[in-house]
Structures are given as structure tokens and as C-alpha cells.
View 1: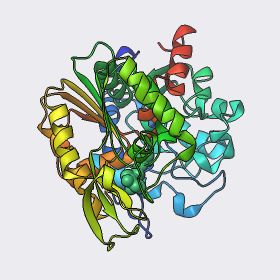
View 2: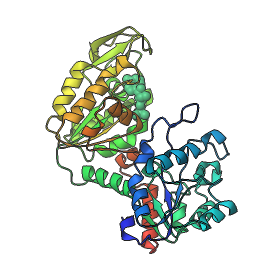
View 3: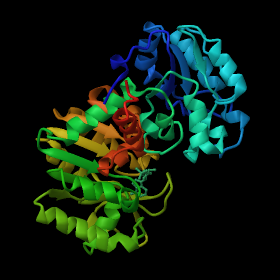
View 4: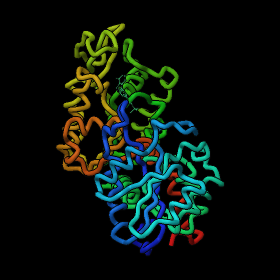
Length: 400
Ligand code: AMP
């Protein structure tokens, strides 16, 4: 994929689609600016090359209406402070006022456009809206991996209208790491999949089974798998309609000679509550009325042994309800196991990312993806709409 290094950006108006959808507290203070920092290499490079930077992003879900508390103003201020450069916020993302501001920009000026999702057309991948955005620039750069799985106007349709389109450093980095892990990986390749539901990750499970040597299951989805093998999981979260599907995945894994790991013990609680009564039991002994909310210590040990010879690890989804201390040990132990491994380790998904950061081990992972949904879409073996759009531009010669 073409990157900005392949393009002469000197003095050009460059529209960068980023994901500045950072969390705000109730006073609109940014509580984590990782997403802003992750695109600094692209911003810094363009400034060094004397480009005029028009930056656009969405923020949360204003549902196509102007919601003042979802303005990108705090982001403009934070970005300005980080890069020590003025970052004015435009009153909108399209329209005559924005055009006027853009036409007054000089090389190395930065303009942040207001929340794209204040217009319903953004999420409708609307051609007119995309054309308006595209008309602001000479070059369009997509550096928003975390929304690359959404066919939104500023991600998808825009490449039909921007004179030139290409990928930013973050998007390229994300795709490169993922493909290093999946195409011709060092083996054994191990996927660790956890989280709330089999249904949310079914396609990822089915795709990963075609690639991996070992599949390790945790989180609530393990309950559905355990139940499908005839184990009584009490009141644990289970998707009863997916028992056959779960059974078929296990059968397929056996047929393909993939090593498939399920928890052997669990931390169970008498209710879904941080102050619940808890105990550790073998999965065969989950009492009626109790629920499995984390993998147990024997499972953590088993999983650490399974990861011992791994050369590549892809991890998505927590091992338990890690938001509550009482049920966070399994996920924390997994963070340590993955961090201790000599493998190439790629971690994706919002919760997994949070868990890794909470334990202070993020520096020991090879790569932590900035995208939850986009990462999962790659695990499903699908091509991201953003990548399709950039390829389309490339094939009609609008990428250079
Ligand atoms: P996901 O978005 O699918 O990765 O799911 C993450 C959520 O799964 C987290 O909020 C966890 O609290 C939840 N989760 C993980 N394990 C369990 C479990 N055993 N029972 C209920 N929820 C769980």
C-alpha cells in the first residue's frame, strides 16, 4: 500500500482522517490521549514536509446531530499542547466557512475539523458529503485504523473524490504487524480469544482455526464451549443457541489437528458482584446457581505452558470480568504469560488493551493495536473497507 513517503506533500493541502475518539470525563477532560499520540508520526512528518494539515475525526456517537459536549475542541487543545503548534478548530467539517478557513491556510498550518458525525451523512457513506470533504484537499490520507472497518464517508467514499489517496503511518503499521502474525508466521502460532460472547467472535474463531496451531479460549465464551461438551456451568453466561456451533468448532479443531484449550478450573461467584462470595473449583464442579467469572489458577498455569513454545501470539478478549478485582487474576496472569513469551505478540481489542495497560506491561508486547472492531475484522480474515477504498483509488491512479 502506498504511504505518504511516496507522495510529494510539500505545500499541499493534506486531509488526514484520524481517530481522535478519545474518552472524555464529565467535564470534557481527556482521560487518555493514546489515540492522539498514535498519529503523531504522520502529523510530524507532514509538518516537516511543509504540508497544510487539515485533520478530521469523529467523536463518540452524536447520531448525526450537533452535540456540543462531543465537540473536538478539547482534542484541538490537547494536540496543540503536545506538538507545541496552534491547532484551531473549524466550526464544522464541511461548508463555506470551512472552505474559507482552508483557503487561508499556509504551509505548516493545522486545522482540525469539527466532529464528522455531527452529520448523519458520515455514517451513511454519503457521496455528496464525501465529495465536499474531498474537495478540501489535494491529498487524502487515512490514518484511522480504529474506524477502518466502517464504510463511512470519510473512510470509504472519500477516495472517489480526493485527487490523491494514501495510507498514513499508523494504518500501515497496524496492517504490517497483523500480516506479520498471520501470513507465513513463525510457528507455533497461537490465538488467545476471550471476552463476552461466542457470537461476537464467531467469524474470528472460524477464520483463526484455519491458520493457528493452538487456540486458547477464555472469558464468558469458554462457558458456551464447556457447556457444549456436557459440563454444567451453573448460572454462568452461556449462549444456548450456539452450543452446536461451539461443538462444531471443537470438532473442526480436532479434525485440523489444532490444539484447542478450554479452562480446567474457574473462579465462581454466587452473584455478579464485586463483593460476591467466591471460590475456585474445577469446571466439572461449578455449583448450581453459581457463575464462572474468571479462569482459575490451574487454567492460568495450563495456558502458560501452552504458550511456552509459541513463536507468534495473537490475543483478543479478557479471560474474565477483569473490571472487578476479584475476577481479574486470570486476565492479569495472561498478560504476564504473553509478556514473558519470546514470541511476536500482537494484542487487540479495547478491553485487552486496557488490561495490558493496567498491569503496566504494554512495553513488553510487540504491538498493541489501536482498533477493537478493525482488529477483529482482520481476525475474521476480511479486508477492511478503508483498505478496499485505498486500493480502489490506487487502481484508478488516484493514489499517486
Ligand atoms: P468482548 O468485548 O467480547 O471482548 O468482552 C469483554 C467483556 O467480557 C468484559 O467486559 C468482561 O467483563 C466480559 N467477560 C469476560 N469473562 C466473562 C465471564 N466469565 N462472565 C461474564 N462476562 C465476562
